[in-house]
Length: 185
Image (cartoon, rainbow, N blue to C red; front, side):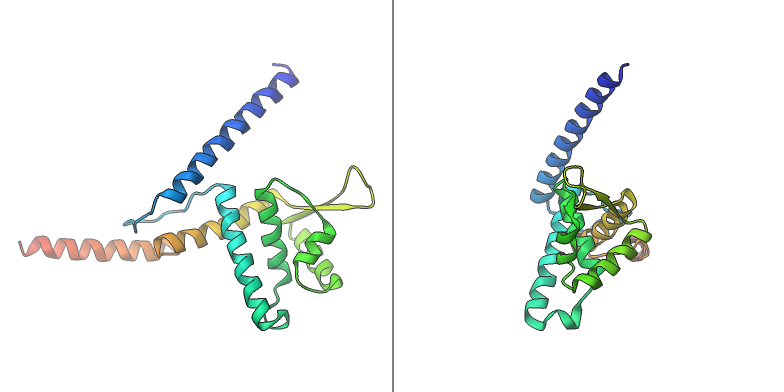
């Protein structure tokens, strides 16, 4: 297989995957999940998780509007939420936009951005079109960690449990009540 043919196959697979994720998102919006007996993990597409990130960012904005940013500031988290939402749109963003999204001073934002880069969750690259500009995006590890965090939040919101031990405790109670009912029949 030539390199060009391989690229074409990869592109077709990506298009099919995006289409399947769009269908999954549509189902997610129209299907109400009841509490299951056992929860192992929450599976969701990047766009569905981006909606959770946007909701969190909106709620943080409301809180900041009422109380001010000095009380509740979390610059690193605000930048990660912003970068995740942009990843959902398949966009890398200018470093200045990311530092603005932090809600803190430019120097504080740069310090946190540097820490995030050292931790390996963001990457900063020079823009191709303008070598003075820098683009920021989540690394694969950063995307994975944010996805896990947002998926757990989605799981808790939908299902009312946030850990496997809580789910197994619920399952144990269910079986205990079921077996005692059977014993008295």
